[in-house]
Length: 396
Ligand code: GLA
Image (cartoon, rainbow, N blue to C red; front, top):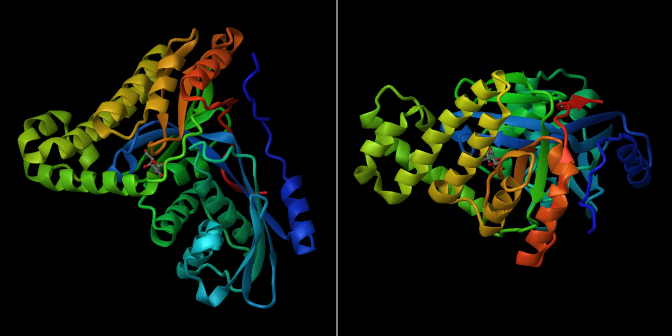
């Protein structure tokens, strides 16, 4: 049996320097780095004012920048052909083939809107060690790496919370994706062997040590779903509608995630079936995040794992953002030795599953067994890899 793919645990800076040199023709003047993330638990709780627990991974995106004197923002990328030029004083979202620059471009625009001195054109090159389409938020990574690079180039400071909020603004207002703060918050606050706990209502970020002896595995279904963005927006809208309906029954609650699940149950008729399911998922999921924090504090990996698997079940049946490929990966993963729990990670509708395991999972060929069974059922080979909780965004 072919061993599953293992991604190298390193994020070397040399490829982005070489790319810059090759495509721009000079040495970069500043470099930013930001990691991808795993959503450990807290599915669609972030934009509902709830809590989430994530981990930055030890893979991410490097962005190298240098000044230009002609007022243009000039973009090249290891992942895309050609280059894109946008005048600094006319930054608007790009359409068509140049769309890939919108994450970096949006950050430049938001920095300028907020009065940071991004006051000259620049060259920008990026490289990535994040597996593409694996649901590990390469978009947040490129946003934060760009902000770090530009802060180095133009000489201003950004603290981690500011970095996370800027990245989210770029995504919400420029890219047009109504995401919460999870991806950017975890990428900003990541630390080696730590999880990041975010209270998305107060926007407080906290690093929580990972108990010894546990590992994260990612199973990328390689299932791409063309409607991900519109389905994410649908869920966002359904949650807002549910909150409006629930407000009179829970006047003290400032957001959907703060409402007690018993109130949601009592309002089922008023909510209608779809809003009922979405609201029950969000309110119960928020409690699962709080229980996960307690399990972590007690070092109880088996309790934590059960919460992860319960979260997936709720995504499958209530939030309806899973797909058969992800359900199968979860079923397969949790039936292997050494797996505490597994769930879809990120927005859903395709993408990846994460599992929390101990060392027995790899020792007893769990990854190979899951890979083989998945390939037999779906005629597609999943990409399976082990990753560690790594450092957060930084100017290199
Ligand atoms: C995506 C979004 C996040 C979050 C998750 C679901 O990753 O970018 O803000 O909503 O989905 O929890």
